[in-house]
Amino acid sequence: MIDDLKSEQATKPPSAVSAFWHNISMRYQAALDKCTPFTTGRWVGFCLLFLLFALRILLVQGFYIIAYALGIYLLNLLIGFLTPMDAVSLDEDGPSLPTRASEEFRPFIRRLPEFKFWYSSTRATVISLFCTLVPAFDIPVFWPILVMYFFLLFTLTMKRQIKHMIKHRYIPFTYGKPQHKGREDNASPVGSQHAAKS
Image 1 (tube, one colour):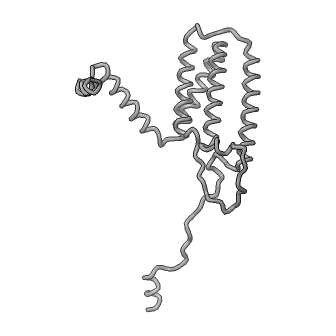
Image 2 (image 1 turned 90 degrees about the horizontal axis):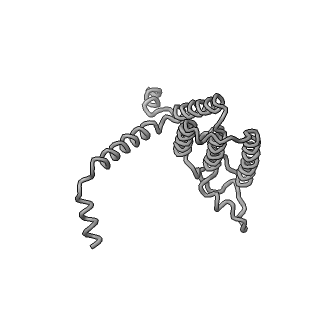
Image 3 (image 1 turned 120 degrees about the horizontal axis):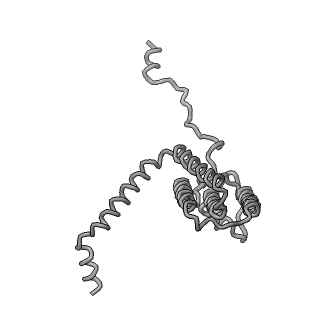
């Protein structure tokens, strides 16, 4: 009976609304796929959007709860971006084998990839920007306490993350690492050896 119901749903043509949403989601995904290789442009766009949000907060002199929530969420995303995927296995307190320079190379794989970090940050900033348009979210708070608590949380979290990096000897950034080049070939081409002999 369930199989009959599934087959009826599979043969049933999609409604106009579901076809419309499917079309919109396909176009949205295509736009995301096109912007994937432009890392610098995406992050510049995010920074401009974030500056627009900060300017809105400063001009309105309100919505500090929204700004605090966005800051905590972005901090959480940053930690995911800086943490390796196998961090759980790195944090096991059991005995571990000694590490050597000849140990097998393991590439740094992020728990949160760069594109998902950018996408989640941008989406959260856009949502926060729209939340500042709703007066119900402007809850009166003493904002210096929120700022102080955010910086305290940021400092403690980054201190723990840096200790984790030092303990497990990994660098989450590719800049500054040695680039391996191919072997330089000093031998002359075969044709030039024959030309020199004649």
